[in-house]
Length: 262
Length: 154
Image (tube, rainbow over all chains, first blue to last red; front, side, top):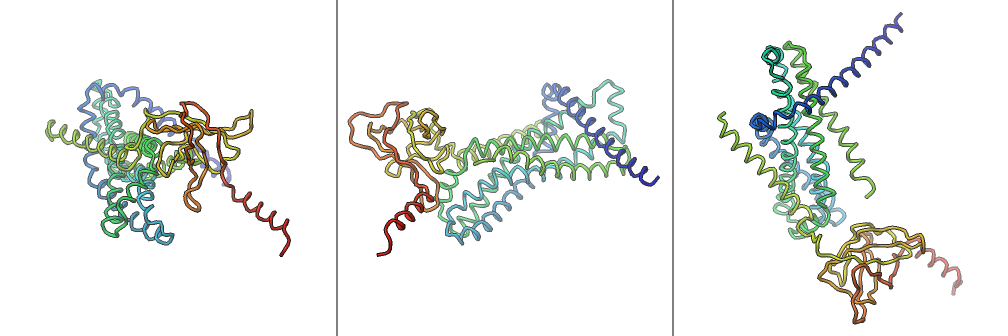
């Protein structure tokens, strides 16, 4: 009996997991299908870009600056052993543009903006605002979900670009201004190594994919949250955990496709 | 918050984001040194290209004059065919010599062009006839050991 019940437990978990993935996919497709209104009434999307993009600016800029500074410091210590301090610019720029920029900006975005989205929508559901909209024949997906989705998807690549440029600036401050690496070789080696298409555009594509993943997870968790105080707090936690994992796993997959074999 | 203030903030945010992208493209990346339109193609056959890769630089007298765009194996002569795109400002004589060289001891490989004395210039699409392959370290060591074995101790 104990074996049967534990098998049943596993079965329930798997069925629930598959069901949730299916429900999330349908939710994502519905969001895309009802996206028309978020572009026709663009001020709805602009409002969400303010709350997810502009409000995340400070944490993104400060974090980018410090990540770049740390990279400059640690990179210098290591490169100095091989007498190639002039490659510091390459190291800082490539690691930021390819990996650290998209991933760290997305992680910060998930915990700063994603959790807020989940809590907001979960609370809207708990206070029956979403049911009220349905009663008034307003589609909550078109009115509430889609603008937040597009606001997040547009904001994250812009935030990532700012994160990476801030990071390069931080690396420049530490490497060139503080430590005294030659300024000319810092920039020229960086420009020789960073390719616009291969590095910068692939970073933008990455951050776009992360933006889709983070906002869909955050919105779905909020929309699916049990309408209680406990349910909303659990959903917020799940948003941060799941979107962080999704970012890291997607990053590995995208890196394997983009930067393999060179 | 008021609608106009909101729009202003979001507008500034978008402009700053695109500005950061432009900085990444021109200051950090190589878009500022890109001349896509003004180039012409040349080809060269090598019996061994070593570690040459697409986008490797092509230098003449140490000056960057172009990039390798394509490398493939020509199955008619079983040699590597290297397509190079050269800056239009630079013309090379017909008897130019193409060598695969290495920058530094362990650095990247690049193609060095040494111009000859011919009065006619290579036209776009033409093949550089005189080439020298990459030096492969194993071959070099092999030759060295072989010559050592040939001439016994003096």
